[in-house]
Image 1 (cartoon, rainbow, N blue to C red):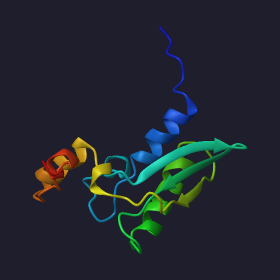
Image 2 (tube, one colour):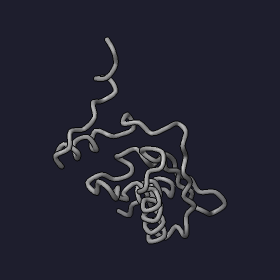
Image 3 (cartoon, rainbow, N blue to C red):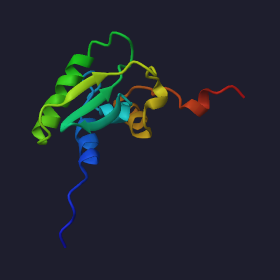
Image 4 (cartoon, rainbow, N blue to C red):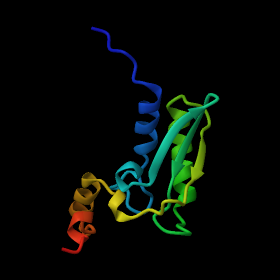
Length: 118
């Protein structure tokens, strides 16, 4: 049986999202919640990312990693956009990111439900 090719947007999201965070390479930018959106506009892949904090020095390296990964996957040179709103919070982290931090020896932040007042 021949399987259908992966849809371009899903593949673009998977490729871009697999880029590791340069400061915590056990996390991908998708699991960390930095990857916000992907789209193809006029044949150009566009990827939106949000810094974990204003002035994050890793953003240039993350963008370069995205460009390398997306080009290597055959999408051509992408446009990487920094999106500041809404601001990143630890609520954007996936359960996989929290597990990876724990396994790496870093206490993950509590999940949103655990921080809500009762």
